[in-house]
Image (cartoon, rainbow, N blue to C red):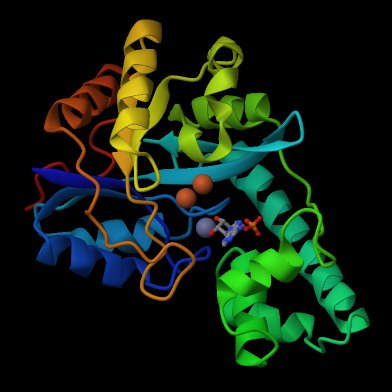
Length: 284
Ligand code: AMP
Ligand code: ZN
Ligand code: FE
Ligand code: FE
């Protein structure tokens, strides 16, 4: 009964298509997955379609990158209505801002003597939500750096010369959009962003869950987050945050253990909130 509720596809900065992710999940006998692309919902429908006729359940989901006290705070949304007009419009605006930022990063890199174009970056992103990993991949292909990691640490992170901030929602707005779209808002990987300090505040906006299980959480951190979630009455989620082979987080799909009990609680939440029947539960 294994699940992976945090996976990126080519619809953002992952390297596997939604179809390929579904196939891998089926090979690994997972019972449920969520494709949580950055600021994009386009991976959900193809994955649900690819899983049709199998017992793999695909939860509609998204990961929204927000900003709080100038730090990154990622909010996951589960069981969202992927046709919710307000959410779709907000995400579209964010993706447009991502494209603008990629243009400005290309300009900065060119000024630094690393001649890459926006078109090259956009080609890396394909139909996906464009991000710094696509810039990194372009720099690797052009031979300016050896690895994506080197591209980040030399040029693309805050304080480095080609870093460009972009328009981001506040966590309160992201949570609100997710709730309005019928979904459950979850704080992603608090261990990466050190965002657990904001949990109380975020709960006031309607945060309903905490991603305790994550590739980058040590067992000790995971235990802390489980205790925190229990104390505050938050639901618990977990996943690998896999970005596919060769991606920025090339961990294997399904490699983070999430207790079935946690997943069953999520399904219970969905049922109580009328969110079942969206993805087929036991497909025929
Ligand atoms: P963006 O959404 O364009 O801001 O890019 C964020 C993505 O870049 C994250 O989801 C990671 O996949 C990747 N990333 C961010 N920081 C780093 C870093 N320091 N090293 C490698 N990858 C990173
Ligand atoms: Zn990513
Ligand atoms: Fe994230
Ligand atoms: Fe992620």
